[in-house]
Length: 298
Image (cartoon, rainbow, N blue to C red; front, side, top):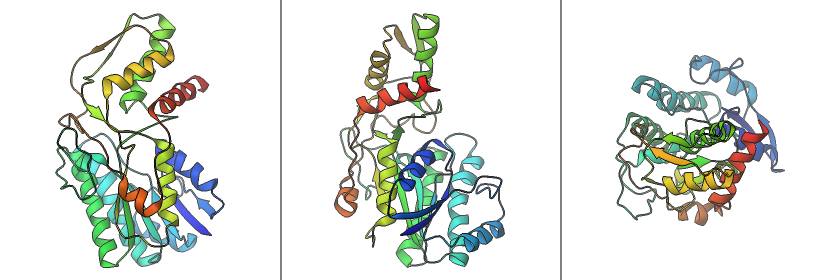
């Protein structure tokens, strides 16, 4: 039975991680401090130490991070948060398993058609990717040295219910809903030629649980992907067809800076399957339908 301290429980991924943890009978308690209790991004280190001592967690999961913003903001939200957690856990919860969410952006450009493994040399091409790679490396060093039981999950392109407009399919869904409401003949998005590995957020949450409950871990980094690359255009067209939208999808401008140079990314998830017994179980069609259904429910 495990007591888990979860940061970022109100965010897109965090919401689903919380649901997966709370529904698992092997988890005794899930503690989700809001920002009023402790702000992992802006809070002082002493406050985190005090929270860990008061909570006495068996595991700590952080879903806190930033997708966009200045380099300084990205490093504060992704790298410094990881360092802060490692330092505080060393002082107050040295036996707790620490899990953070990294990003496929850590890999940078990979060969077309290739499935990227965790051993692939990481050469990020944006401040976003660098900020996550630095955090992942800190966790690796701590885990490999025995200083902390620390693990990073490199999350590819998470999708599913509650997806925000910071993500391509969340943005596309919002545009499609607006177009249907206003009978608009077209929607406009950025370029859609890149191939992405869209993984359902609920599968990512299941991987978090698997990592937390594994008795021992041979590795400190795991890919969290679907194992299948799909053209962004194909995914958006599936979204439009599922919603019943037949208008034109116009592409213009540039993609997000964090990934615009990467034309292809596909995860090799065999490490998680082999060591944790985890595999993604939801396909793109299911995820897309649930994105739309969740949007209608709001």
